[in-house]
Length: 337
Image (cartoon, rainbow, N blue to C red; front, side):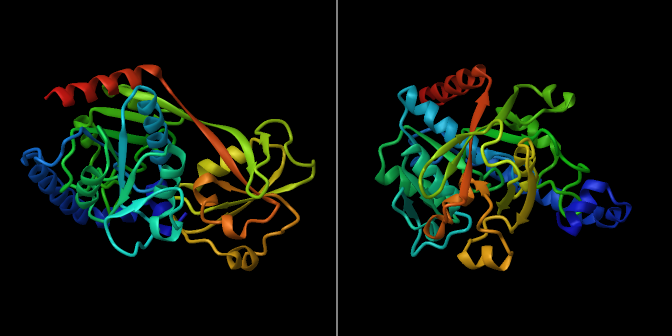
């Protein structure tokens, strides 16, 4: 946790000095948002566009949710396509089509994992509107999901899903830089769907349409052999020391899951979307005789140098069934319009 993040979490008194800047930031954001709302639906947008994002800094569980939604929509007969910024990757040119054979250093970790897990066409571009146009031009899709992009106001959207961390919520409630919010909490009232990841506070569930989501750990998967061990009991030898490696926006949720197991957990945190190399593990003094555990998103960046003691945690997204019903109704309504 950085110095500023700690100050937000602890509601440090000196943050009030940044409040005037936060007010200005919030006003400019509102103006940009109003300009986006005044735009007409572009003629090239031939499929409903759903943006999945959040209003705060840090990870909230958007990517697992998007993967689950893509898989569920395919089961219902839809043909989803996905756009993303491609965080952590540098493509040779943009827009860039991503598939399971792509170089993760070019596509970015999230986009690669989404393409691999869903089999859907995925296009990345820092300009998400350009990614959208390329996707619609080259692929046969009837619904588009945007990985993040809630604050990418140039991107027209039909539906918005805001993901909220049920544990951290909104910290001190201030917008940047006095707090971690990209937009004010009033923004939640404009979204069609709110998904709360983790055990939510009562006040967040009182928002219209708020749905609970749980990320449930299912198995530990060996990155060399593919062996799966249930996430229960003692999957490793007693006395083992789990070395948890992460490059996440909110690694504490991942660490908390591993602490359910009967082992000492040693934590190695890297910046969000960090490009791992074998040297990272050596420089951190990670013991190659003890289990190394990471998320599946981080694992895709470590495959080329993975050792027999490398494992990733496979999780399952649990959502209330009514969420899928409401979402598909909204999609069909947009298609009719």
